[in-house]
Image (cartoon, rainbow, N blue to C red; front, side, top):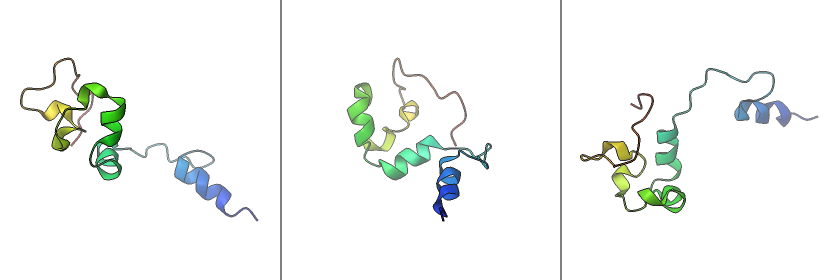
Length: 76
């Protein structure tokens, strides 16, 4: 019996019950799973020199980051 079949689809947000209104907070996920910003530093070189405290939220720098856009939505 494939008991796990539905569970994997539910977790992935696919299948019969996709939970379409489930919001994903990318900043929270980044801080939780990449707290030091290693992924960001490797794949977004223009952010590599930023301090750890703002690596996931460069728009919060006092002077901003030239050429880097502000978020399109509110990220509380």
